[in-house]
View 1 (tube, rainbow, N blue to C red):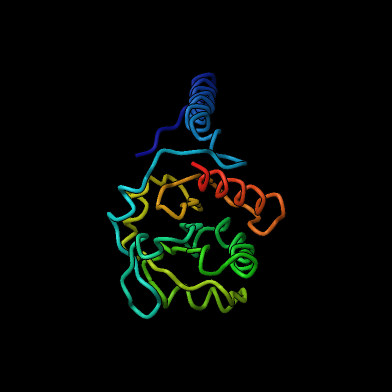
View 2 (tube, rainbow, N blue to C red):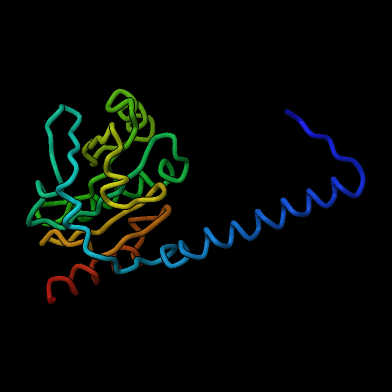
Length: 190
């Protein structure tokens, strides 16, 4: 059903819609503002980490507990998310720089198409070092209380969530690497 307003009534309705959108945008943006930019210390989400499973490209089932003893940079993303696509090469470079027995970048795709959807994207942009991790049902979003993509969590060697970033980031920049290392060092001392 369509309503057509003319004259002053249409202007009043239009102004009310703009004002409502502006206020709504402030209400949504304000709670998210602390998450933007540098990492924020967050509540311990380790109880939720075992609450969901994901798999590798070859079908092996995992949980975040599978990485016990290693620090994990968990990036939840999707191929249909433009900021996710943009940051993926920097995650691949970070894995090249820091990946090993005590640190792993886990790029967890929530694409419903699984490996058939992610593999062509990895090939297209030249991802060489990241392993493919898949959460086709998307249960990680609810389990980890993620409200938008990309969201990245830094999980310490003991399984505690140390920090969380909402939005894209250049993960291989020196400032970012220093921030990650400082958070991990502080966690080791606690």
